[in-house]
Every structure is written in structure tokens, then in C-alpha cells.
Image 1: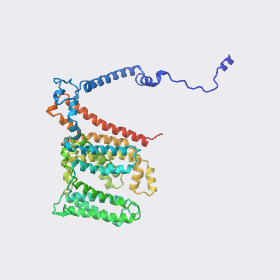
Image 2: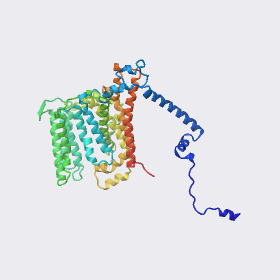
Image 3: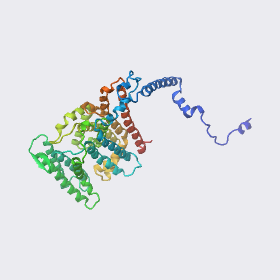
Image 4: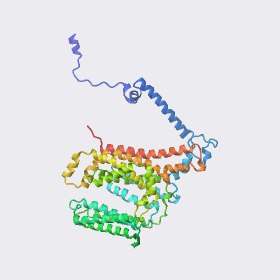
Length: 499
């Protein structure tokens, strides 16, 4: 008996048997996930029946009983031959208005050109294999906004002296930040100290010009008040001093021209905005539809991210004044509803502007949305900064990097990777919140659709549902695209922490 048992004992490793046919494939997946137990089977059947019932009713309303063609409301009424389904003829008749608002028909080619250019530039940034990323970024974030403003409006803006002084003050501020980041310059050199003092004088003068009336001064065909003219001269002095300091520090190096970019950008911007290109002027009160939604959303996204980064860094700063101001800004905007922010931007923002600087209604809404979103963005980015180990900061300090070099090259790239989901979530919320600009009289996509409900030629019981579902699909399409690209970026950058 022992020999017989021993004869059938395997002397080598046997391969594993294949799983049962009922446990693999589509059938096995469905059985394992939906019908594993009697309770799961009952719940799956009930949920499936509910989904099929809803999908069938939606399909019947949107396709089988829908009206796709027609000239007026009669086509969508039951008495007029309709079947009580969706009135897609309303969408077809109003489609141009939903996309362009009441933008002039002969000038809508401008919007089409800008949309095509936007798609091309965004694809160049989003697709990793496309070359020339830096050039593409400059075109998208530097050139495209100016071209968009000129094409959509027609250009020929008139700049006041206060506005010109404010632009050169901003250029001086960026140049001072760039030059003072050099280790051999810093903020201790005499020219940089003079530049900072002149910039502060320019800022104080332009703020005082908002409250003090003074006589007008004409210089280079620009009308200045006395205080705004002092601000302009002080900004030029700040630029001259900091450029001298930067030239002496970078003399013989290849990045000398970089110092002149902010001032050159201001000169080019003023020229392009005020030049006459022979394009018909289109006021912003004619903008509407999806075009207006994209303008508000994209401008808010482009402005809220860098501003949110600065606020997050300010809230973590060791300087009490900077930290306090950042905390006050963030907590104020996070504690106020966006509707209130839009009303404040529409009616109160002009009160805080320097003399001669005015914004139209659309620009006020864009500023309000950007400031509101920046407060939330700052908290998202601050979470990423707190997730960076302390050793990264200490290692950057050990390499004798300046604060901005440390943040730009070591800390922020890691922090931004960690909070990609939060950043995109804020962008998605901002895109959907643009529908609130309808409260202050701007006809975005949803506002334009709602205005279409009041057209006597298309008033039917099914018109509101059809229009709202169309608008919801457009919002979902953009938001879902951002969400999927966020997931793709996370996987490509491998932001997860593997154990």
C-alpha cells in the first residue's frame, strides 16, 4: 500500500489550474460585483430597472418625441404637430446667440479666429510631445490676451495719465523683484534702495490722486493730474535706478535683456491698445453667450493661479505685515458670497481706482471673480506647501539660494504637483460660478439661454427644459474635460506616494 501511494506523489511543481469560467470575463465580473449575494442581486435588479426607466424616458423625450426643425413655437406645440418632447428647433434657431450673444454678425469671424487660436495654443501646452513649450507659453499667456482684447473690442483705447503711471509702476515692481533676486545685488545696494523708495513714492502719489483734485498736466498727449504725473515720474525713476543696478550686476552676461522685458511689455501694450487697426469697435455690452463665459472663466483662471501662489507664500511668510495682510485678504474673500463680490466689483471697485482709471462692467466682473477665486486657490496651494518636508527647505538654504530661487526651483514645483486635484477643482468651480454674472446684467451662456425663454416666437412648455439641458451639457463638457486632463496629468507626473 505504501509503495502504491508513493508511486503517485508528484516530484515537480504543477501549474495552477485555470479559474472557473464563471469567475472570469465579463460574466464573471458582473456576477462578482452585482450578483454576489441574494441581497446584491435584488439591489442590482432594482437599480438597473430604475436606470433603464430613466434612460428610456430621457431618450424618448430627447430623441423619439423631440422636434428638430421648425421656424417658430408652433412646431414644438402638441397642437402644431409636436409630441411634447424636446424642442431642439429652439436650440438650432438660437444657437448663434447662445455662442456669440448679440455680437455683430459680420464681426463674428473674430471670435472664431480667437477660439481656433486658443485651441491650438492650449493643445501645444497640454500635449507633452509638442515642442517649443516656452514659446507656446509666452504666446498663450503674454500675446494671446492682448490680441484677444484688441480683436474682440476693436482696440483704440484711450489711456489716462493715471493708468499709464499705474502700468509703469507695475513694470518697476516686476523689475525690482527680478533684479533684487540676484545674490550680488539683493535689496541692500544703493540703486535698489533708491528704486524701492521711488516706487513707494509713485504708489503713494497714485493713491493720493484718487482723493485729491489737482490741475491737469498734458505730457506726450496724455492728460495727467499733478499727483499722477509725479507718480509717473517716480515710476520712471524707479525703473532707471533698478535697471542701472541690474546692468552693473549682469554686465557681460547673457540675461541683461531680460530686465527690460517689463518696461518693453508696457510700451508695446499701450501701443497695441491705442493703435487704430481699422477694426470696427464692438462694446462689451454686446458680448454674451459661451464667448462671455469663456472670457470671464479664462481670465479668472489665468489671474487667480499666480495671485493665489503669492497669497499662499505671503500667509506662510515670516514677515508679520505680509502675513497679516495675506490672512486678511484670504479670510475676507472666503467669507463673502460671490454674488456679493460681483455687486461690490460692479459698484464699489471704481471708488478705489486712481484718478482717471476706469473699468467697464465686464472688467469689473472679471476682477471680482479673479480675487474671489484667488483666495480659495491660496488655501489649496498652502496645503501643498505644508506637505513639503522640512528637509527640502533646509537643503535649498544650504545651497545658498535666495528665497525666490528656492521657491521657484525646488518648493513650488513639488507643492503644485501635490495639489493638482485641488487646483483643477477650484478651476471647475470657477467655470461654473461664471453663471452668476447674469445677476449684474451680463448675459453669459446660461443668461443668454434664459433670455431666449422670453422670446414670444419660442414660448412652449418644453422650451425651458430643452434650453437648460443644452446649457448643462456645455458646462459638463468643459468641466469633465478639465477633470480628465487633471487625472492624466497626475498619472504622468506620478504625484501619488507609493509605499
